[in-house]
Image (cartoon, rainbow, N blue to C red; front, top):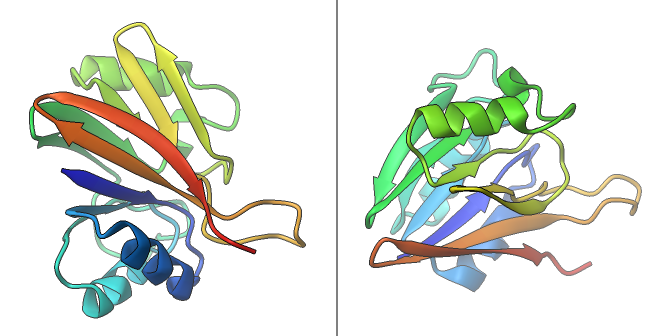
Length: 159
């Protein structure tokens, strides 16, 4: 099973569609900040299963602030991350993911991609789907799951 993980799309639907077409995922996860973009992507790329959570820019959009998914034997905690202070550190996020018995936590909010292994837990931030003045790189995450095991990687969008 292949998961496409995106966050902080901020109306960059063409980049989201590019990522979906490149990866042909089974599941698309949007980690907030313009989850309406994921709904629009769903119209253009309908063959995947979609999960999305609200970010700090989604105050008026429906949706849950966090979810726990069980996909092919892997328990995944998904959140935007702002409620756990991820810009200041990852301890609160890791503690909540462990409390929910997740082996993988997916989050956004910082606009910076990251994959980090901790004891009994992996954390992944796919980065953002936008660029700011050429300083930041647009990116997304891929999670491949098979038989209860998973691998994470970050892909960067072309300039």
